[in-house]
Amino acid sequence: MSPVREVPTNHPASRAGTVRKKTDVTTTVGVGIGFALDGARHFRMPVSRPPRSHLHEIEQHMDALTPGELEFFQENGFLVLQQLAPVALVERLGLLTEELASIADPPVEYEASVGYPGAPESQASPGGRTVRRLRHAVSRHPLFLEWACSPAIAQRLRPLLGDQLVLPLAHHNCIMLKDPTFSSDTDWHQDCRYWNYERTDLVSVQLALNDLTATTGSLHFLPGSHRIDFGPDRLDEEKFLRLDHPANQELLASVVETELAAGDVVLFHARTFHAASRNRSDQPRRSVIFTYHCADNRPMPGSRSAASPEIIIPCD
Ligand SMILES: O=C(O)CCC(=O)C(=O)O
Image 1 (cartoon, rainbow, N blue to C red):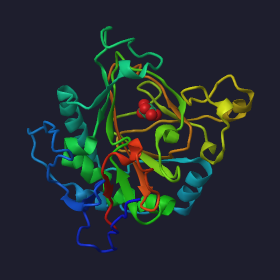
Image 2: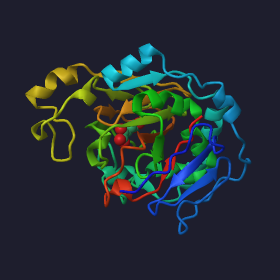
Image 3: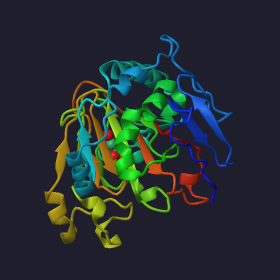
Image 4: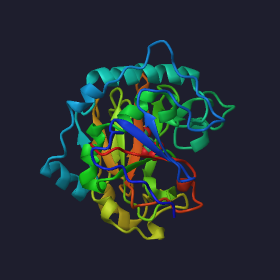
């Protein structure tokens, strides 16, 4: 198992991400500077507006979770934080997202690849090249890295996960697009179903870049499901929660639908069952999502979770 180099509290690399590579070589990446994680892959970064730091704005939002918020998350496995991201940052990420969506450099995930309800049947069908996720968000523009490593997020995750946070690049790390014409419903699932860590304790942070509503596509959660052990019979062969299983009925009846405005964030545990509805509006729906774990919760060697570098979040 590879050792993690700890970034001490008050390390001068504060406000910078530190990349943990498979080779155990740890390098510091200045936030605000474009970089390629993989020498073979160079994303076309939008150049119409120069990178501009929003850290001073993010720092104004550095409060930790309140005891009530902490208790809510521990009990329910998700938590909405309204207006966590500064308006200027959200607007800029939104503009970047539109540019990046129009470029749609790989790696991307197409609606047609997931085969979820509502998705085009194949890439040859009408709408078949509709992109659902722009993967590797942090490599597409440094502002996504800046947000992902920001104290606004870290301060809130430390009480949930531990002090030394790590941002895996293998999972989430994507801009989620939901097209008004071609989009899909995501059935009930746990994000940890195909992730491989010593423990399933990861927390994801999804930032709404515009409104995520019942019309544009809302996120639904099954409260407390992160604390339940689900036998394999309660899941289908793709590990979605079975809607027809008697043991799932009470939980399914407890569904909570969230609606997010631009700048709102939802935190959710990797074991929390969640689902999302398709976009039935005439506007694109945009969000960005990252996941985090504690440095002592390592990806399993040889797994997809261990196949990409990870970024050590600087301690404040
Ligand atoms: O549509 C969303 O915002 C979330 C979808 C989701 O849960 C997933 O793709 O894993």
